[in-house]
Structure formats: C-alpha cells, structure tokens
Length: 245
Length: 245
Image (cartoon, rainbow over the protein chains, first blue to last red):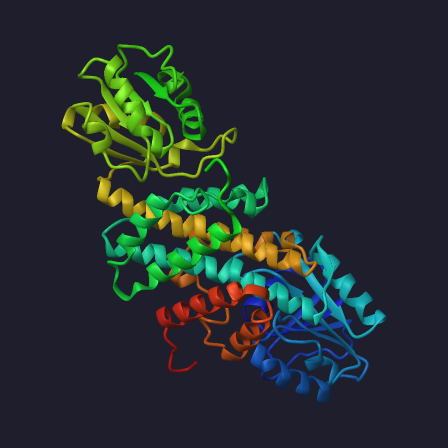
C-alpha cells in the first residue's frame, strides 16, 4: 500500500515506524505539504486536533476528489474529513505515544470509522498491516473510549505525580513505590480491576481511613484530603460492606 | 537464620516463598501457635492489623522474653510489639501481594524499624536474605509511604474499575485500553510522573474538557463528572498554562 502520513509529531513518527517495511510510506510536512504524492491509497492526517480542519482544507485543494483521507484523532469526529472528501475516515490507534520509544504495535487497537464500505476496506487493509486488533468504532463510541482513557491513563498518571510530590515534600522516596506500581498493573492480567481492589476503603477499615484523613488534613491546600475522601467514598459505595466485615 | 512466620495468609505465604532456601522457616498457625519453635532468631507476625495485638500477647506467654519479634504491617506502629517484647520491630515489605503469584522479591523494598541496635541487626540480616532494597523507615514515615501507596495503587486501581464499568455500561470493551495502561506504567521507567503527564487537562484544551464534562453529566450519579472535574482542576493547577498555549 502507498500511504502518505501528513504530520511528523508523536503519532506521525510512530505510524512511520509501525508501517516501516510493510507499506510504502512518506512523512509529509503539514505546513508545506511538500512531497505529497497524488496517487496514494490512503492519506493519514496525524496533526494536533486544532490543525485537522486546516490541513484537510488544504489537502482538498491539492488531491483528487476521490482520495481516501483519514485523521488519527481520538477526540475529533469524522465530519471534519467528510466535509471535504467523499472517501473519508478515522484511523485512531489507542495508545499514549512517546516520540523515539518504539512499541509493540501488533497489540495496539486501531479504531476505524469510514464514510463508506470501500474506504472502510482501505482503512482495514492499512490497519491490519500494523495491528492484530482492528476495531470498527464510530465517532460517538470513540469519544467514550477517549474519556475512559483520560481516567485510566491521564488521571492515573496524575495520582502518581501527586504521590511523588507528597513523598518528596516529606523527604521520602517515590522510587520505593515502583515495584508496587508495576505489580498493580500486572495484576490486571489475571483479573478485572473491580476484583483486584485492595486497601483500607474496600476493607471498610475506618480506623485506617480516619487516621490517613487526619494526616492529609495537615497538608496544605487540602487537595490530597479532597481526593482521598472522594475515592474512599466511591470505593466504599462500589464495594458495600459485607455481612462479616 | 531460623525464622518462624506466624500467619498463613497473603503476606505469610509470600514470606515463606521469599525466604525459601535462604532461611530455616516454619509457617505457624496464628490461632493455635502449634509448632512454634522456642529458639528462632526472629519471629515475624504476618496477620491482619486487627489481630496483631492478640497474637503478640499470646506469643509473650509462650516465647522467652528476649525473643526478637516483628510485625509486617504498613499501618500499625512498632509500639504494638514493644509493649510486650524488648527486642521488637517492624518488617514491612512494600508490595501488593496476591496469594499464589510469586514475585521478584529482590526488588521489593523492605522497610525496617527496630526497638534497638541488636534487633535492627537481626531484621537487616533477614531482610537482606530476600531483598536488595532494605530501608530504615520509622512508624511516622511508614504511615506516609502507606498513604502514598493508597493513592498510587488502590486509587489507581479504582480508576481502572470505574473506566471498566463505564465502558461496560455503553457496551464497549475495557480490554481495548490494556496496551495503553501498560505503556502508561512503562513510561515511568524513563521519567518522573509529573513530566509524563498527557491529556486534555495538561494541554489546557478546554474545548475537549468541556465536551467530555458535558458527556459525563449524562451519566447517573454524577460520580464520574465529579472525579473528572476534581482531576482536571488539579492537573491544570499543577501544570499552569504556558505563554504559548
């Protein structure tokens, strides 16, 4: 397959590496569109959400009307592309990408949406070149997956950042928690997260909850106390006390 | 070393496996204390927090006054043991243990506290048999580490459970997020969590934040909306908007 990737940021870099020898790919500068080929099977727009509309508009001026064009964003609807191209789609790899760090692309879900069957076929062919997990996901569902990934990835990372700052502030070492974090993630291989829940809240151990809450009320800004109470309440609600607790 | 481990739950099981051929260990039933040896270098109490006081009291009736006795709890102070034994301590491996799943014990931090130097020496000797990370941590510091691990492990897992329930409720598949979760954890190997932060909040992408908040306000109970707002505010506060954003 012949694929031009418009955008050379994080996602663009990874798509180039993921396709590697599996497709005939060129990375195109989204500002100049220099080197853009006219006869590609697929054009993938891998730019920031804000820039998608502008890039799509400029592609329309350059490419044939029947070109298959897809963006790679989790939060942008397909209509940004359908407005300008009749063979339009979304090609969204659900992953957090760091430029320079190659990943096992085979297991990354690629969520596809297409304006029509022939475009879907092209997108599916391209997605299968790099991943074993090709999913049909419409814009509404993709928005929900994106929200879930904000909770599961962005908010999780922020909890680690808060923990790290908290320990730092007391002259203690966040590194001591690293084996714990790894095992917390690994446990998900064996069981659903609901069944993996541990800690004072799920045990309804109010003695420990009260002691920890008291301690956190001494931290400035009450931010940690606020989060502690929110989560403790939520965990206790989702895991009601058992008869024998 | 000769070590009796009182308690055959999660932590007891793991201590038995961690010491394996490295020490002469016996697992003792905490209810009957049957098989308890009189001449051990160390007695490790690995029972639930609530049971530590009772087990320590009954050990006092059985063991010589100079026995070295330590509990393995993160949340219980050393005084629970010092009250009954003059060679008292805490031997706390900071990890989330699942019975039946062996771990790489060498990298698990073992946090030690001792009533005196000779007990500290015994505890250090035992800890070094299983881990490369032996730390001196007093009861106050241990309480802070425990709070940090509640945020970094228990609350993180709950975010995953909430995401899973949310996707389930919309007929979508939490498994699609797994590669993302793994990579989120792996990224911590390269950088501090603060520097690994991604997502709409850290980008001050208010368009996406507002859209996701609107969507979450349709979920019953407003729990997800509440957590979303708490985290978004917190992330934005800790990552102030840059001039060029």
